[in-house]
Structures are given as C-alpha cells and as structure tokens.
Image (tube, rainbow, N blue to C red; front, top):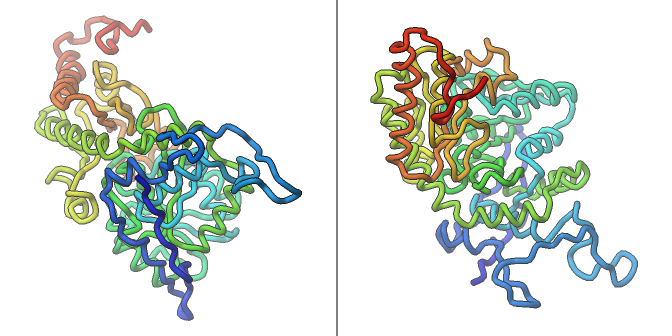
Length: 438
C-alpha cells in the first residue's frame, strides 16, 4: 500500500503583512487515511529492487556520481540527506498534519536549531515549567548568543504584556508542561502572537502526534523528542520538527545541514519502526495513566495530582478541546505527603516502575524532578513553576493497569506508613524489594 505525500500548495510560507502581523500557512490537507493506517504506511516504501516490505538500512555515508556534480540518484552525502531519514520525516509530517518534517540527533538539537535561526537581539517568551534541558539551553546557550528568553507561569494571561513589539520573535509552549502537566490553549496564544508577527512553537513530546496535533490549533512549528513516545522503546536518542512554511523549510534545512546535528540512518530506521505502533502504545499509556492518577487522587498520602485526563485538572476543558477524545496522555505527576524524603522513598519502593529519567517508553518510569530532570534549575525558580521537592513524576508504560495501580499504592504505604511504624528503627533502604546496600 502506498500513502501519497501531501500535495504542495503555491506560496505557502509565513507571510508578514504591512501591519506586522503574519499569516500562518494553512495546514496540510486532511489525510485520506486514519492515524493507525498512516502510522503503518506513511514513508514506508517498498524496496524497488527486491520488493522488501520493510525498507533496508542505508548505512552508506556517500553516494556515487555518474559525472562531476551528477549523483546517480537523489543522494550525495548522508549529513545532507539519507533514505531512512527521508522516510521517517515523511511519516512524521503525515502524522502531524504537516507538509514538512526535519529530523535531528536529539530533542535538544531540535530546540537549538530553531533558536539558532533567530538573530542576535531576538526575544523569546516561554512557559515557565519547561523541560530542564530546554531551560538550560535558553538560559545558558541562547543567552550567550544574544537571544533573551522571558519565562511566564501564566502565558495565556501574560502574553500581551510580555511581547516586545520589535524584539519578540518566538513563543515557546509545552502543553502539557514538564513536569506539572499544565495545559495552554494553543489557538488563543497563536491568535495573539500572529497579530504581532510572532511564531509559535509547541513541544508536543508529552503527548505525541496521536493525542495532539498543535499545527491544527495554529502553531507554526511542532517539536518532539523522538526519544520518547514516537520511538517508544528507550533505545534511540533523536528529535524532530514539523511545519508547513516553505520559508521555514529553507531556513531549517540549511541549519540542519550546516550544524550537522543529524541522526544516524539506523536510528531513523528504529524510530520509524517504533512509530508504526505509536497509536497502540499511546492509547494504552493514557489508559494506564488515568487509572494510576485516579488511584493516587483517592489516597490520603497524596497532596495533589497533576493529570489532564481527570476532572480535577484545572485545564481539563483544554484537554477536551485539544486532545484526541480528551485523552490525558501517559504522563502525570503528584505531590506526596512527607516532603522530599517521602518522594525518594516512594521511588525506591516501586517494583514495576523503574527509577530513571526519560519517558514515553513501553516500560513505566518514576523520578523526582527536583533532584533529577530539573535539578539544574534554581530552587526558587523551580518552586515558582510548581516543581516542589515533594513532586514525583510518573511515565506510564503499557503494562497492565491493575498492576501499575497496585504498585503505586504499595509504594505509598512503604513511603509514608512504614517509617511511622518503625519509628526511626535502623534499617537499610529498600529498592524494588531488595536492600539498596548503601
């Protein structure tokens, strides 16, 4: 089965009007096929010489030429383009309802390339509770190149006041945010930003293209850490950006090649393979996270739960508007009674959830952001964004929901009740049911 590429439209680029506002190119035409069919078939071309159903891995770094400057086919050098990368980019574009997609060596490299496209003196407005690596790049690297970033804990309320008419070039959104799971109404922010000629970027890593398509809601660029849900098996580090503008395609393709932060052919092949089951994995992860969130919310040992898939979430109405079937995704966080020590004990006493950074894999993970993924952010800034010492972040995988519920509830008992029972009696810490040994 062949999925035809989305047709190009003439003059589709981000156009600046005389009054300074911009017209975002219309999104790509609505696909003929549904998500699951696209996930399996988009970019998956039959091998013309052997008929292989799965594309071979093209490991060659260079390609022969019939004459000087005349390559045999479409490829010259693998940093510039590669068959496996092209196939993966085609698949992502289809799933994000985009005309174009560009793959990078990591999610952070994707962020860096987009920021590198801005001139010195540019200003960016970002949500406060972003991924720690994004915060690090904004404050340590972009700032050194003359790009200033202002963080806002309430972007939708503050956006008009934070925009600097001649300097602000970009609005950076994570929705849901990492790790507090706050949502942003993308359409509302994009409407304000575009009046001022400002582009909107949405990091869609926490949800994946299956749950949310930001370009459909007015965003100009959607980015992912492919490492997470898209690949889904915790064995690839990669990133991707998708968009509709011809102008962005020209600028970002140049930077992709010039900077050279590109993924290997093998990583592209693996990520494309993982993408084929995204709809199945994302659906199960969201189901599991909903079950775990409701169990945590009912526990007397929990202060609060952050999960957009349940009614108590303050932005539940946005989830219903922006997410497929109102799904909450596979990520959640919660505040545990007993402070940082209790958060650590909880993570050390799960038997299915693995204490590790990252997210979006088939296996369930747990971590304490203040000491792990967001440790590089000063405590005052972390807590202003809701990242408290007692906050635990959970990535639900595709295990059985009942097993995951039992695991978090027993870990809560060991984290909160057991220390009270022992009343300070000496004993080794426990990890996955076994002595830690330190």
